[in-house]
Image 1 (cartoon, rainbow, N blue to C red):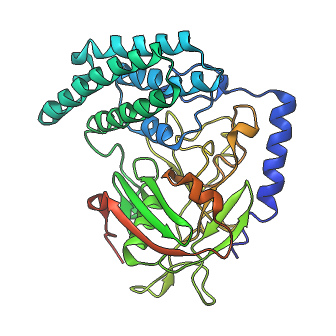
Image 2 (image 1 turned 180 degrees about the vertical axis):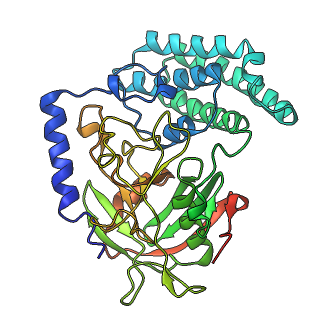
Length: 368
């Protein structure tokens, strides 16, 4: 039933590679509006960055701060463009010189903590200026990472409430009204991923619920294709998904895709079938380690417990949209353990999966 990507994915990804190379697709037409401050043509390929941009907030200064710090890494890869790096640092510094513009989006009770983060960010940006003068690439990347972690906390503090109502027809399914961090221990090492209920509450809620139940503990990775995907979640026996002990039935999860600019996700239909060929999901297939709900190719609402990590390296293609966007639901990204994910193959095993943060955001089903 869930022979998901063995041939179709491989062929599709090769087609994407050829099409993007020959047509020269760029991100100019695809970059989410929330990412508009990023340089045109630079695809966002870092899961942590995508998670930041996916937060339901509207504060232009903090987005400018984030974009400036994100761009430093791109400039370092591009033959260490030190003048461009200095400009990025100066932009970040100017944003931090007007903290009131950032704090206006932070609820009053959270502002003292936000002010402390801004003070820490100012200090860190000053340190970056000195490191840039010395052209210390490794130290710059390390300090940049620390600052972006602070930006993440600052942006998360701006989220005031869950941004939309999930359709009542899905109230019988667990939902994640926020985010959760999951640690997966494997025989090759540990993985950390963040699942995003702001963009995919039903898909992420199902996953977190199954992690809490211990469903994935001891399961093998069942399918893998080098540079394409790594899939797991198929339980032993004839069942190919989760059988809810309360109902005795297969728990089916609808396809759920939030499109940039939409107020709520689209359910039960691919973007292609909906005629939305050029619309971009908030959580795209552009990062190594995207966490995706598997489903039968012919059953758009047939996902259950099986999921896969997307392993295709975006650097192999020009920046652009992936044909898988809108066909399958991305619901999170790997944030730690890329080197471990690189090593995992079919036959390797999940020793345990644990929710280490955000379990309070899990909402239990309202009806049986």
